[in-house]
Every structure is written in structure tokens, then in C-alpha cells.
Length: 114
Image (cartoon, rainbow, N blue to C red; front, side, top):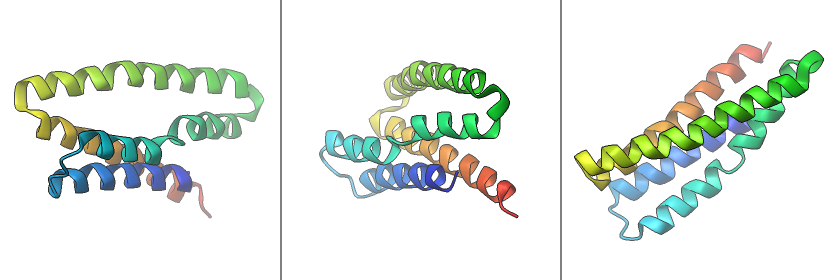
């Protein structure tokens, strides 16, 4: 969960820094954010299997399905926001999704520590 939190916060930092400093290359910002967030999906599946060892396959399948739904809906929602409010708002929203990943994982990590 610690790695997951780090990935989420790193993705948010990259996107927000790119927006704040008005980086001209959106592809560069989103590419770096993608590198930061790359481990999220496999780490989530791994954590689900560890958390529910008696039903690791079911847990991994549910998390994989939830990830697929998120992978479908979040870009679509972000695109709608971009059409309505502009690209800067849409990219900032991508940073917010990443921040949500980091904050959720941090809460889980703190809860699991003795």
C-alpha cells in the first residue's frame, strides 16, 4: 500500500506541476504521469490477493474488473470536462484522480500498520 500511495502522489505531482509550470508538451506530462501511475493496477491486484488469501482469485478478479471500469469511465469523464471547461481543467482533474489514489492508499497503509 505504501508503493501505491507513492505512485498516486507522484502521478498527482507530475500532472499538477505540469499544469502549474505550463509545460508546453502535454504528451511529456501525461507520459511521466503514466510512468508514475503504471504500478497502480498490478499492485492493487496483488494487495487484493494478499488481503483475501482464501479467495485470492475472486478478489483479484473484482479488483481487475473495477480497474477496467475506472479505465473506461475516468478518461471519458475527463474528456467531457475538457470539452466543457477546457484542457487545463481536464488535466487538473487527472491530477485529482491521482491524488485520490494516493490518499486512499495512504489511509489503507496507515490502517494496516501496527
